[in-house]
Amino acid sequence: MRTIVGLQSRTAPAVMHMKELVEAGYVGEVLSCSLRQITSGVLTRDSGRTWQREVELGANTLTISAGHAIDALRFVAGDFARVSAKLTTQVPQWHETDTDVMVDVTSPDTILVNGTLENGAIASVFVANIPWGGNGLTMEIFGRNGTLTATSGGSTNVGNVRLEGAQGSNDLAEIDIPVHHTYVGEETPKGPPFNVGQMYDQFGKGIQGDDSSHPDFDTAVELHVLIDAMRQSSEERREIDVSGG
Image 1 (tube, one colour):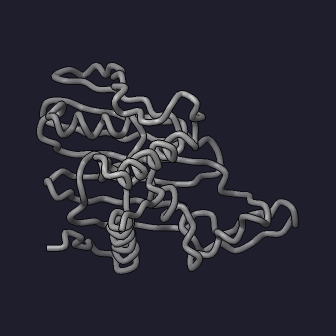
Image 2 (tube, rainbow, N blue to C red):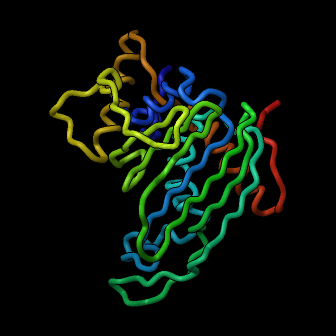
Image 3 (tube, helix red, strand yellow):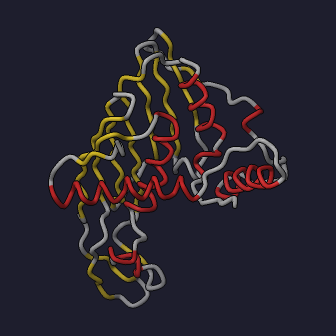
C-alpha cells in the first residue's frame, strides 16, 4: 500500500537541489548546519484559531512550523542521532480579537534545538513565532569545501526558496534550480499549492509503477519520533539519543 503525507518541503525544487548538491559533494564533508525560521503574529488570534493554544491538541509552532522546517533540514543534511531541546511558551496569553478576551496558552511558541546528525555534523535549530518582524527562514549547510544557503520570506513548505552557494570562497552566489526538479505544469499556481502539486505528481507516478520520491507514512513517523524526543529533552533537561541503534 502506498501512502503520502503533507511534508511538501521535500518536493520544493530548491530544497531538492540543495540535497542533490550535498550528495554530489558540493560542500564536501558536512561539518555543521543551521536552521532559523521566525514568523510573526503570536499576540492575537480570532476565536476560530485560538484552539491551537492548547498543547494537548497538537497543532502548534513545534509540530507545524518547526516540524516542516526540521524535516527539510534532515531531508537535506541527514537524520539526527542525538538532540537537546528547549521548548518554551514566551507569550502565555493571546488576545482573542473577535471576543476581546485574553486566553491562556500552553502550546510552545519558541523552539531551540542543538543536535548531532548521524554523519557527525553538528546542527543548530531555532524556530519561533514572535510578535513582530518575523523574517522567514534561513537554512545553511557548512562543509569542508563549501557552503549552501537556502532562504525564504516564508518557509520551505509553502514559500519561494532562494538557493545560494560558495565553494572555496566566502562569496555566496545564487544557484539556478535545474528544471528536472519541477514536476508540475506551468498552470500550477505558485505559492502554497505548488509543492503540494509536486508531491501528488510523484505519488501518482508511484501508483502507476514509475520511479518516484515522496514522503510517506514512515517519513511522518520518523519525524514525530524526533519531535517527541525534543519534548522529552526539554522536559527532562537532557540530551536524547534518537539514533535507533
